[in-house]
Structure formats: structure tokens, C-alpha cells
Image 1 (tube, rainbow, N blue to C red):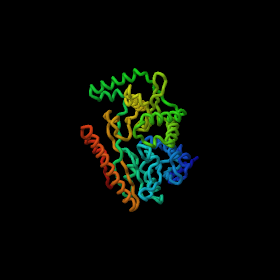
Image 2: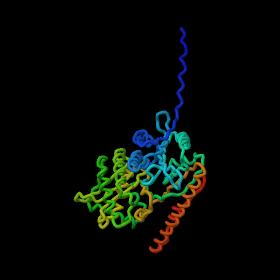
Image 3: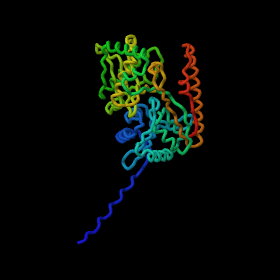
Image 4: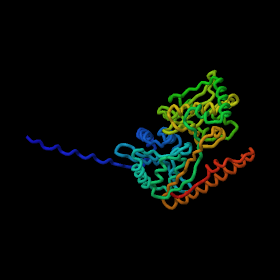
Length: 397
């Protein structure tokens, strides 16, 4: 008896790649699960690309008809997403990152295992979208996925430097103190003992407690800035609603931590919001009672807790985010400069890029003048490395 050979196995069908641009106002809410799954597969993404952060921003800041959510699918799996917004700048339609106005970093979401193919399809989707002249990607960290997009971009690309960010290694505070000169480290340890003597209790806020905790955070933040120039956005109700909504979901997914500090009598004296990403933790906002500074070093108290939070999650970087304020600089951090990319399409993009480069240069000149004036009043020259770190650069790649 003979047996016939088994029929050959049917070939596995090739995956199907598709693209779409979502403009409807419910897109971010409807796609929150695939976006969250893609966020987990995008190692370069920061907390500001979390679907919770973006959806909360759109709910409180978004304007009808402005959303441009570019998506790339591989069969039923989301492989790339560019959450963008169309705005008019210098009379031109420009695509900018969602939530860029209150975010310290921008980027795209792309599956790391299929990055090249996903980016190629994303470029196809963006170029097929009508009525825009340039894509302006601001505040990009080194290693951002947007830099890979720029390398594949078929048109003109302009680059300028953006804001400097100050970073520390993600280990515990004791490891950081060990890198300081003995006298400096000794003074800081003495300040830590003074903090411990205050018997301050630190607790983490649960997700359902986030709205009230955010309200208290912003109340303390406003108090500590009383009589000084404060970011007006931090005092607006839409910012409070955004932060409350975002923190509720981000705490639930370990993408944010809100620390509350109470004195021995149980009174709330400080609150600190830390955003958690794949590669870093970032100190986004804090508030404290103004009188607290009379008794302890508040930034040292917060830094110890923030570094412990960073270390417990095995993250290599603790970022103090944008800005070079003196209270940050005293910890001897590393300066990492964000970059701004402008991806052009058509001749109007050149006009827009030229305007951006000139404006960036003028702002830098103003900052240098103000820095020089401050240092002259203080009797010391501005450090040359800071002047170089914030200078404008632009060019074609």
C-alpha cells in the first residue's frame, strides 16, 4: 500500500500594511488601547508621549478640526503613530506635536522591531495628507524616533537647537553625594539630618486621589511663587483639569508618581509630580509652603525622594527637565540640549524654516545679553559651556 505525499503547507500570507489620518475628536479615546500597546513598544518615547498625557491634553486644549493623528497598521497591530496638530504660523499651515506647549519633550511612537518599515509607511501617510507646508517637531531628546524619521525624510530638513535640560544619574542620592568634594558632601549630609529631624512623612498618591492631589499641588505651587513671575498657564483651570486627568491614568499605569510631604502634625507642606518614562524619570512640577524654605533645603528633600523613585525603577536618568535655573545647577548636572527639526514640503517650508532660525537666533542673543548682565551684577562671567550649549545651529541634512 502506498501513501501519497502530504500536500505542501500553504504559504504564510505577507502582512498587510495600511495607513490612515484620523481627524475626528474621539480618535485618541477610541485608540487608547492600541496607542498604549505601541507606547510600550517604543523605547525612545518619553512620558509626554503617553496616551494618557495626550488624551488629557486633547480633552482640555484641543480644537475641533485641528487633529492630525497619522497611523500605520500592520494587519491589526498599530506600528507607528504621529500625534500632530495643524496650526497656522507665519500664514502657513504647519503640523506640530500634540501637547507641545506644556510638554518638555516631543516625539513619535514607532515599534522598535519594525522601525524602518513603519517609518517609511508613516512618511507616505504624512506626504499624502494635503494642506500643510512643514512639520515642526520641537524639544526632541537625543535618540528620539523623530531623528530617524528625519533621516528617511525625502525633502529638506532644518535643525536648530532647542531648550537645554539638566540630568543626573538615576542612582540613589548617596551615590551622587559620593561624587562631590568632601566639604560639599558633608554640608549636604548635614542638611539631610536637619530634614530628618523635622519628621516629615512622605506618601504616594493613589490614582483615585490624583484630582485632589493635583489641586493641592497647584495651590502650593501658586503660594510659593506669590510675588514673583509665575508661568500663567499653571494658574489656568484647563491646566489643572489636564493634569488631574492625565495623572489619574498615568499613576494607574506607573507612568507618574505624586509625592505628598506632611509635617509631624499631618499638615501638607509640599507636593511633587514625577513623570516616569522608559529611560528616565522627570521632575515636572512641585509646590511647597513658602515658609518651609526657612527651616530646610526643600530641593534637597525633593531630590532625595525623586532619585529613590528613579532608582527603584531601574531608570538610568533623572531629568530636571527644561531650564537651567540656579537651584538645578547646584547639583552639578549634565546639560543635554534638545533639538528642533523642521521637515519641509514645498517652497513655503523654506520661508517658515528661515523665520524659525532667525527667531531662535534673536532669542539666544537676548538670553546671552541677560545672562551677561546678571553675571556682571554678580561679579562673575557666564560659564562658556552654557553659552555654547544654547547657541542656535541650523543646516541641511
